[in-house]
Image 1: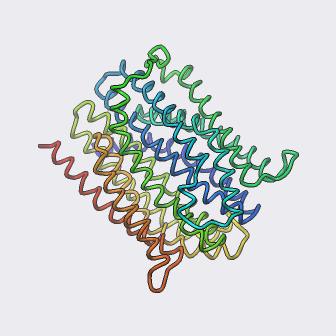
Image 2: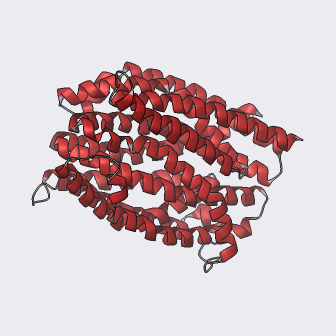
Image 3: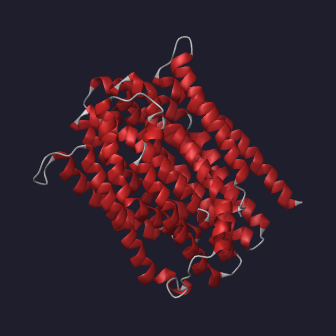
Length: 444
């Protein structure tokens, strides 16, 4: 059972991991281009990107509720109900785009959290306003993304990710550097390119849903529905805690950029590079967690509790072992990796001082990520949200602020990363305990 589930999870996770890493290439492209363009633009994408990622992860987290719903229906053999679940999630995505666009157009509550250099703030505002143009399309695509994963069909996501990153590489390079024939747009060029790619990915998703052979049996367009209150309420009941937990977790990292801002552009830029590497590393446990959710959801839908437990054990072992190896490799390759991002010696020094924390917390991040997704496979989302609030805002963000500015002596930007390590250790312990209790309750 363990070997079989491990093979199934790896078969799903590997294309998903490649798709996510290719997508992360867009962030790497932005960071590298702006790292060589200017410190202010790099700081602006760190601040603006933190706000944007927090908003997207929160809203996309709500839409991920379609994954356990579809996975359980597929496992139970109720494939005729899958198209309706997808359409309700797509309608919900359009509704959620409205507050999302408003937040990106008016980010004052986020920017007020810290004192930011006026030039950096102006660039960050322009960047966010441009990203708002692509947000509705991105949320529709993220719904398709969750749907594909619920059915164990990650390959379309890999193909679309390859197209997205190739398009972004050409557009961003042209706009940031001025090679398009006009002035060099810096961070605004990255925003324009990201917005264009959002609409491109949505159009690719629509085309694949219509023409893709794997989705023909579900008759997705023939089974379309108008918005319905009851299924939308069910998606919100599951998705709101998921979205809020996503917001808490990601903001505990991305909002560091706002709190680090008073330490200067060099500290923000160094933090941005390490945060970028941390995000890339996170793709491994995230891919394994998504694959585990699908396997658990299918088993729960079929009421095969032994298979669900086998999927969880396989996901945990794979994520723990592979993430520990990844942390070691990151530590050994720290200097050449950081050199790829920037020529600035001061920024390099800040980044090198922080990267050890990222290497250390990999195994704890893997455990808490897979545990969270396994619980979602059982439709358990509320208590994991409370754990996220305690660990990532309480220990990670508040604890990091205290260590950075109030400890004796203050640890500066390193205080935030030390607190992040501690928050992930605590989250892995609490979520692991919660998952064991959930499995014991089902067995009874």
